[in-house]
Image (cartoon, rainbow, N blue to C red; front, side):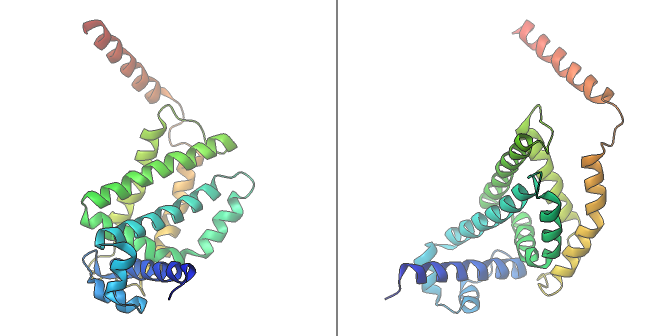
Length: 221
Protein backbone atom coordinates (compact mmCIF):
# COMPACT_ATOMS: atom_id res chain seq x y z
CA UNK A 1 0.00 0.00 0.00
CA UNK A 2 1.30 3.48 -0.82
CA UNK A 3 1.92 5.95 1.96
CA UNK A 4 0.56 9.49 1.78
CA UNK A 5 4.04 10.76 0.90
CA UNK A 6 4.32 8.23 -1.94
CA UNK A 7 0.99 9.43 -3.35
CA UNK A 8 2.17 13.03 -3.21
CA UNK A 9 5.42 12.13 -4.97
CA UNK A 10 3.51 10.24 -7.67
CA UNK A 11 1.06 13.10 -8.08
CA UNK A 12 3.91 15.59 -8.52
CA UNK A 13 5.65 13.30 -11.02
CA UNK A 14 2.49 13.01 -13.10
CA UNK A 15 1.92 16.77 -12.95
CA UNK A 16 5.48 17.52 -14.06
CA UNK A 17 5.25 14.98 -16.89
CA UNK A 18 1.95 16.53 -17.99
CA UNK A 19 3.42 20.04 -18.10
CA UNK A 20 6.25 18.81 -20.34
CA UNK A 21 3.99 16.73 -22.59
CA UNK A 22 1.36 19.47 -22.91
CA UNK A 23 4.10 22.00 -23.70
CA UNK A 24 5.53 19.79 -26.42
CA UNK A 25 2.43 18.29 -28.05
CA UNK A 26 -0.42 20.57 -27.00
CA UNK A 27 -3.20 20.23 -24.48
CA UNK A 28 -4.82 17.30 -26.29
CA UNK A 29 -1.77 15.11 -25.75
CA UNK A 30 -2.91 11.55 -24.91
CA UNK A 31 -3.06 10.73 -21.21
CA UNK A 32 -1.35 7.44 -21.98
CA UNK A 33 1.68 9.41 -23.22
CA UNK A 34 1.74 11.39 -19.99
CA UNK A 35 1.41 8.20 -18.00
CA UNK A 36 4.31 6.63 -19.90
CA UNK A 37 6.45 9.72 -19.30
CA UNK A 38 5.69 9.58 -15.58
CA UNK A 39 6.17 5.81 -15.39
CA UNK A 40 2.63 5.13 -14.18
CA UNK A 41 -0.60 3.70 -15.56
CA UNK A 42 -3.25 5.90 -17.16
CA UNK A 43 -5.61 4.74 -14.42
CA UNK A 44 -3.35 6.27 -11.81
CA UNK A 45 -3.80 9.66 -13.47
CA UNK A 46 -7.53 9.30 -12.99
CA UNK A 47 -6.96 8.21 -9.40
CA UNK A 48 -4.99 11.34 -8.56
CA UNK A 49 -6.71 13.96 -10.72
CA UNK A 50 -10.12 12.57 -11.65
CA UNK A 51 -10.09 13.80 -15.26
CA UNK A 52 -8.03 15.58 -17.89
CA UNK A 53 -9.52 18.86 -16.63
CA UNK A 54 -8.42 18.01 -13.10
CA UNK A 55 -4.90 17.38 -14.35
CA UNK A 56 -4.98 20.69 -16.21
CA UNK A 57 -6.06 22.52 -13.06
CA UNK A 58 -3.19 20.95 -11.11
CA UNK A 59 -0.73 22.05 -13.80
CA UNK A 60 -2.22 25.55 -13.80
CA UNK A 61 -1.97 25.79 -10.02
CA UNK A 62 1.68 24.76 -10.11
CA UNK A 63 2.47 27.33 -12.83
CA UNK A 64 0.63 30.00 -10.84
CA UNK A 65 2.57 29.23 -7.69
CA UNK A 66 5.92 29.23 -9.51
CA UNK A 67 5.31 32.59 -11.17
CA UNK A 68 3.87 34.13 -8.01
CA UNK A 69 6.82 33.05 -5.86
CA UNK A 70 9.39 34.32 -8.35
CA UNK A 71 7.66 37.67 -8.90
CA UNK A 72 7.07 38.23 -5.19
CA UNK A 73 10.78 37.67 -4.54
CA UNK A 74 11.62 40.37 -7.07
CA UNK A 75 9.42 42.89 -5.24
CA UNK A 76 11.46 42.68 -2.02
CA UNK A 77 13.79 45.69 -1.73
CA UNK A 78 16.78 43.94 -0.17
CA UNK A 79 16.90 40.80 -2.25
CA UNK A 80 15.57 41.93 -5.63
CA UNK A 81 18.90 42.28 -7.55
CA UNK A 82 20.22 38.97 -6.26
CA UNK A 83 16.86 37.28 -6.91
CA UNK A 84 16.79 38.58 -10.48
CA UNK A 85 20.33 37.33 -11.17
CA UNK A 86 19.52 33.96 -9.62
CA UNK A 87 16.40 33.62 -11.75
CA UNK A 88 18.28 34.63 -14.90
CA UNK A 89 20.82 31.91 -14.14
CA UNK A 90 18.00 29.37 -13.97
CA UNK A 91 16.09 30.42 -17.10
CA UNK A 92 16.36 27.00 -18.71
CA UNK A 93 14.35 25.54 -15.85
CA UNK A 94 11.46 27.92 -16.55
CA UNK A 95 11.22 27.01 -20.26
CA UNK A 96 8.76 24.11 -19.80
CA UNK A 97 6.41 26.39 -17.84
CA UNK A 98 6.62 28.96 -20.63
CA UNK A 99 5.89 26.27 -23.20
CA UNK A 100 2.89 25.14 -21.18
CA UNK A 101 1.55 28.70 -20.94
CA UNK A 102 1.96 29.16 -24.69
CA UNK A 103 -0.04 26.01 -25.36
CA UNK A 104 -2.80 27.18 -23.03
CA UNK A 105 -3.00 30.53 -24.81
CA UNK A 106 -3.14 28.80 -28.20
CA UNK A 107 -5.91 26.52 -27.00
CA UNK A 108 -8.15 29.10 -25.33
CA UNK A 109 -11.28 27.98 -23.53
CA UNK A 110 -12.60 28.14 -19.99
CA UNK A 111 -9.53 26.70 -18.28
CA UNK A 112 -7.24 29.11 -20.10
CA UNK A 113 -9.47 32.01 -19.04
CA UNK A 114 -9.17 30.73 -15.48
CA UNK A 115 -5.38 30.57 -15.87
CA UNK A 116 -5.15 34.14 -17.15
CA UNK A 117 -7.50 35.50 -14.49
CA UNK A 118 -5.39 33.75 -11.86
CA UNK A 119 -2.29 35.44 -13.27
CA UNK A 120 -4.00 38.83 -13.06
CA UNK A 121 -4.99 38.19 -9.43
CA UNK A 122 -1.45 37.06 -8.59
CA UNK A 123 -0.04 40.18 -10.27
CA UNK A 124 -2.31 42.35 -8.13
CA UNK A 125 -0.99 40.58 -5.04
CA UNK A 126 2.73 40.78 -5.76
CA UNK A 127 2.51 44.39 -6.94
CA UNK A 128 0.65 45.19 -3.74
CA UNK A 129 3.53 43.59 -1.83
CA UNK A 130 5.90 45.80 -3.79
CA UNK A 131 3.89 48.90 -2.91
CA UNK A 132 4.05 47.95 0.77
CA UNK A 133 7.81 47.32 0.47
CA UNK A 134 8.34 50.66 -1.25
CA UNK A 135 9.71 49.17 -4.50
CA UNK A 136 6.58 49.74 -6.63
CA UNK A 137 4.56 52.90 -7.15
CA UNK A 138 0.89 52.71 -6.11
CA UNK A 139 -1.80 52.61 -8.80
CA UNK A 140 -5.13 54.38 -9.16
CA UNK A 141 -6.56 51.05 -10.33
CA UNK A 142 -4.55 48.05 -9.15
CA UNK A 143 -6.53 45.48 -11.10
CA UNK A 144 -6.44 47.40 -14.37
CA UNK A 145 -2.68 47.83 -14.09
CA UNK A 146 -2.18 44.15 -13.27
CA UNK A 147 -4.34 43.11 -16.22
CA UNK A 148 -2.40 45.33 -18.63
CA UNK A 149 0.94 43.96 -17.43
CA UNK A 150 -0.37 40.41 -17.81
CA UNK A 151 -1.61 41.21 -21.32
CA UNK A 152 1.79 42.65 -22.21
CA UNK A 153 3.66 39.60 -20.93
CA UNK A 154 1.40 36.95 -22.48
CA UNK A 155 0.94 38.81 -25.75
CA UNK A 156 4.67 39.27 -26.14
CA UNK A 157 5.25 35.55 -25.62
CA UNK A 158 2.68 34.67 -28.28
CA UNK A 159 4.12 37.13 -30.78
CA UNK A 160 7.58 35.67 -30.29
CA UNK A 161 6.54 32.01 -30.45
CA UNK A 162 9.05 30.11 -32.61
CA UNK A 163 7.59 29.75 -36.10
CA UNK A 164 6.92 26.31 -37.46
CA UNK A 165 7.59 24.66 -34.10
CA UNK A 166 4.71 22.25 -33.72
CA UNK A 167 5.27 20.20 -31.70
CA UNK A 168 7.43 22.56 -29.65
CA UNK A 169 10.96 21.24 -29.41
CA UNK A 170 11.61 21.19 -25.68
CA UNK A 171 15.31 20.74 -26.34
CA UNK A 172 15.36 24.05 -28.23
CA UNK A 173 12.88 25.92 -26.02
CA UNK A 174 15.36 26.84 -23.23
CA UNK A 175 17.73 28.54 -25.68
CA UNK A 176 14.82 30.35 -27.36
CA UNK A 177 13.50 31.54 -24.00
CA UNK A 178 16.94 32.68 -22.82
CA UNK A 179 17.41 34.69 -26.04
CA UNK A 180 13.93 36.17 -25.69
CA UNK A 181 14.56 37.29 -22.09
CA UNK A 182 17.96 38.68 -23.05
CA UNK A 183 16.32 40.78 -25.76
CA UNK A 184 13.47 42.22 -23.69
CA UNK A 185 15.03 42.56 -20.23
CA UNK A 186 16.89 45.86 -20.62
CA UNK A 187 14.17 47.80 -22.49
CA UNK A 188 11.52 46.42 -20.12
CA UNK A 189 13.43 47.51 -17.02
CA UNK A 190 14.15 50.86 -18.69
CA UNK A 191 10.46 51.53 -19.34
CA UNK A 192 9.48 50.49 -15.81
CA UNK A 193 12.34 52.38 -14.12
CA UNK A 194 12.69 55.44 -16.34
CA UNK A 195 9.19 56.35 -17.55
CA UNK A 196 8.80 56.68 -21.31
CA UNK A 197 6.99 60.01 -21.04
CA UNK A 198 8.85 62.94 -19.50
CA UNK A 199 5.77 64.54 -17.93
CA UNK A 200 2.22 63.69 -16.91
CA UNK A 201 0.40 65.82 -19.51
CA UNK A 202 -1.35 62.90 -21.24
CA UNK A 203 -2.24 61.20 -17.97
CA UNK A 204 -3.63 64.43 -16.55
CA UNK A 205 -5.74 64.98 -19.67
CA UNK A 206 -7.05 61.40 -19.50
CA UNK A 207 -7.97 61.72 -15.82
CA UNK A 208 -9.64 65.07 -16.47
CA UNK A 209 -11.63 63.55 -19.33
CA UNK A 210 -12.75 60.66 -17.16
CA UNK A 211 -13.78 63.06 -14.43
CA UNK A 212 -15.81 65.17 -16.86
CA UNK A 213 -17.54 62.09 -18.29
CA UNK A 214 -18.44 60.82 -14.82
CA UNK A 215 -19.75 64.24 -13.85
CA UNK A 216 -21.93 64.39 -16.97
CA UNK A 217 -23.21 60.88 -16.33
CA UNK A 218 -24.22 61.78 -12.76
CA UNK A 219 -25.97 64.93 -14.00
CA UNK A 220 -28.04 63.12 -16.62
CA UNK A 221 -28.96 60.14 -14.47
